[in-house]
Image (cartoon, rainbow, N blue to C red):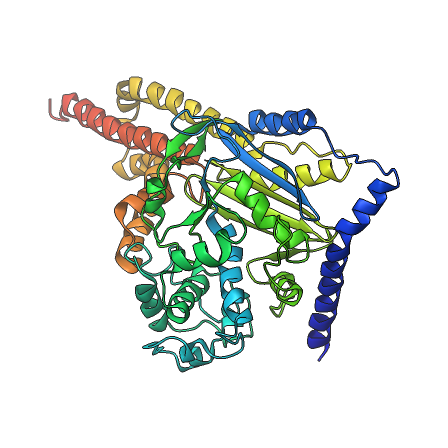
Length: 507
């Protein structure tokens, strides 16, 4: 009962926030009429802040959007893409998991039209959905939206996702899975929830998911440069979209997206200008930039209000404790994204074409822009990923220097130790194989990924090259392993030669 009361209180607060947003534009206009001043930062100040962030963190390019109470304050691109083209406010970039809020809005549009009920089991809308786990028959759209369905992952790579190309296939995969928890009891962030929502939209609307998004979300909001794909490698086919980058030693290195099913979970492609239009109704009581109603206030409140048991996750939006805002981020193999909306009607979105694996550079940029437009001095976060890269670069150079030295002195080592027992020599050589064992361990995990979840070798290689750890770590590991293995091999060879040249006891 206490938890239910907490949810009701959160919903009331969110409703009050939306009500404030409804009246805020009129209040602002009245203040202006009475001689109130606008203390928003100038465009040059914003440019300096964003460009400084790009330089400090070694990013290739970003685009940003800032809105307040339905007014677009700033939408601009900075830096360059992997083709060398300038990033502008109209440069399309993948939204990654920020797409979940867009998918949620598509589902809520169906609910507003009376085509679905959020608390009716999805099986009543999906023909042929026959889950292996009987508990899955009770999963509702609401539980998919706030990720409390009980759907879990079968490993680091979601099951078979590299082999999936349609929402129907995705629904079949999910139907064959065993749930990790009873529906509605536990929040677990899994892309499969939003795959199933995309399938729900397709089944109920009778049209492809991307077509529905275009008709019901993008076009009504004037998001003319936004679109949707089903698989990540299809991003390359979107006009104006270039491959992203991965950060390596402070330099952005171009990297294409490998095959991956993303419909519903990370499918949208948008621009800074369009993201501003997307954020407008979230800061303006559900009205578009033209002032036309887009989504109801109650629906908007429901989307932004956490409904999971922990009170942290809404419908594609996370509550940020203690900061008076909701937000959501996303990451692909070469892109980062982040969006946030504050309780007092400020919305910020950041799209970045550079993945920094050890540190999210989109979130601090968005927060800093929010501070700037709120009249506060934005922080300049330490570029931890560049520090980590510098340390790993130093370790790599040290491994090379020590490795070369050991190779050069292999003969001296063999002569010095040729009279020692073999078991003692094996113990002395064993530490040199530790980097190789580490590399083999990662390779074994990759092979297991291919065998267990159907991941393509290309995808596994891309992951190993810097999705879960910095690429500079992979370089260090490979270099250390190569020199360690070469050292052991050469020392054993020299040792055999030295022993073969020793006179026999009878000689």
